[in-house]
Length: 515
Image (cartoon, rainbow, N blue to C red; front, top):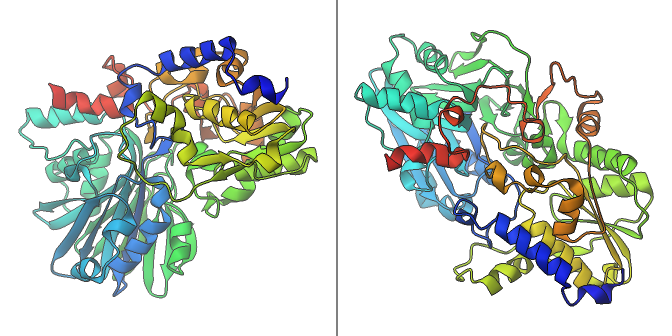
């Protein structure tokens, strides 16, 4: 197939375009801006906390900078100086809202917690920006939550029935109300009492009077690590947030563990019944920053191994291996090294693209991908190209990237994906489309290849991904990770989803606002 044939779209590929567009034309699909959405799964939140530092708020802002990839819709910090709580929450990026001394200086105290938001439940409104704060009989309390409660809507209806008033549409506020209603005496006992009623995946950073608490759900689906900076202790979603402030990594908070940090030191409680952990395997594929260490594994090295296994499982004759930047780079390097095919930056990413106010007409919608990527003709023209990306969700960006590479003169385009086909929605804190919007849930690999316009398409196998991450194949009887988006094996009950016809995590909770 020569490149000239692809400069004018054939009837076959026009039909493929129309078929893919039809799949994405529903109201649920169009809620995502085609210019801002890069057709990846989106992590929901990043959390950070620090105890015992005179510049707690400033360090929290830096930590949130390092965790910006986990949420770009909003950010917030709550601090405590021994007498009073202070809060600043805003829509937008950390750097746009915590970039001045006037803001940081108002966040007084030696304790602080912060949150980056990418909404998986509730709308993008200031009232949903975390940390959420409440006044209780024992004093103030702030909660920053990474994850998603799968029975939040059920609990919310029950709480409203007994007179609770909700100020947000965030599932995190359910935890606030359950803490308020608890008859236990200490903060940690009230927190545990509240968490016995919730289902789902969560890592929490909770701040009360002179106390910082970190919690992971019993399965440990979402990450949380602990660090130390001099006499100060820190909690964060990833180790990269420790690095930016010069803190030392201490350890991961264990699944089902409650870590309590006070002036007296650190206490660890493990009140939940012990169950096999199911850490989210997609943290290694896409969510975590490459320089983080997650559950003892360097993320960059893990992604490179995934690429190497992919090369062994799905070889193809080619002249060059090209990553879809930036998330495809480690996998492409691993694929290149294992296959012996040269690695080249055949696609250049524009890192300075922000949100646009251009009206998304059909023409602009088609060109939107070029705001972020451009084909590097010198590396592509006349060559057989292997494109390596981390995943395919809807397929919209993949199709446009492939067209771009062909327009730059590629002779053949083969796509290799460093994760298995994404066939199921996530309900544990990742913003995913409903199944009818997931390309792999509606098409086999051959038809997917035709729809996105590649000469061949292959995904790493589920076993192959497990081998690359942990050195062991998947134990089908007791999987070592949460891989529900690939397997449909949900380790935590989906109470709300099973009680509603709506299959979108974000829209499940917003149904309440429509009642």
